[in-house]
Length: 395
Image 1 (tube, rainbow, N blue to C red):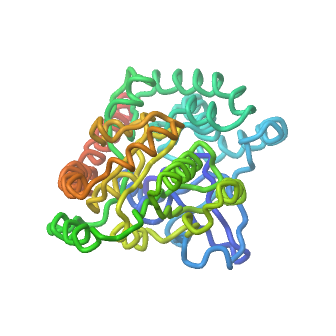
Image 2: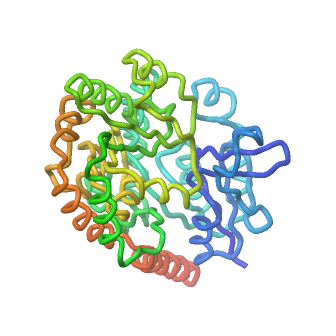
């Protein structure tokens, strides 16, 4: 029975009954790795969470099927100083017992796992899901200190890796090239596409053409400043002064106090709604009701939420960050952090553009259908498995 060890900073969450929950990870994501191994274990940072916060908004991980190994926090200076040695020993012990290592980058735990896997001659591949420079530089002053170190480290690890799975088609490949075999394969999980979605979206648009308020949404953690929601709030304030009213739905977990202050500053309490984190299926229900989806991030890999909105026929606006320009037409790309760009783009939305973009975005999202992505991913896994088998024969 083959074993695979998934290594990443995470975090995932844990309640008082020792149940684990994930935002990025659930059983559907972990099931992908069953293609290469029967036994899957996560080695990841864990945060405690109260049961009343969960309220079915996070995906429970089936611990009867997938093991979870809790790692100490390395995502701070204190954590690096006091926990690094302990985590390295934990990683080495786990990697000795596994057949394959899956290292998700950028992450400190993922980076350490690669070095240990190489030392122990264990097969590994990298999943590169974001740009550490953009993520850290736009995070905080401390982030700016770490950004060059993490970027150089990631560049080196990716360059020398035998196998790399990128979530973008171009952006990450250009910034972090590899000498090994690679594939561009988003980790988006679209629900089964409704063949009649374009007609349904057009019907929704026409039925709501006389509605006074445009409903705009962003799906992202509300405590992560580089997600850029504040720029949309400022744009809505600008539009309101021009007599254009918008309703902004913020979907996502995290401490909302910072954004609430921004809302209060501009007296937009009636315009901005914090909906909190929602289950995956409910997110699609929300997307059916909105007019415009905005991805205002200052850094991204290939945003799943944007693709999900496109698959529902939403008119989408995004920044020139990460893989966003790979998805949207140039006319719907705005500069990072530019309030005037966002306001102007919202103001320019017409009935005709809503209908036109419904068709264009649904067609584009078809390239990311689950079956297409799964086939690309399995082909990559086959090459990885075959290479390890050849190495074992050579030994």
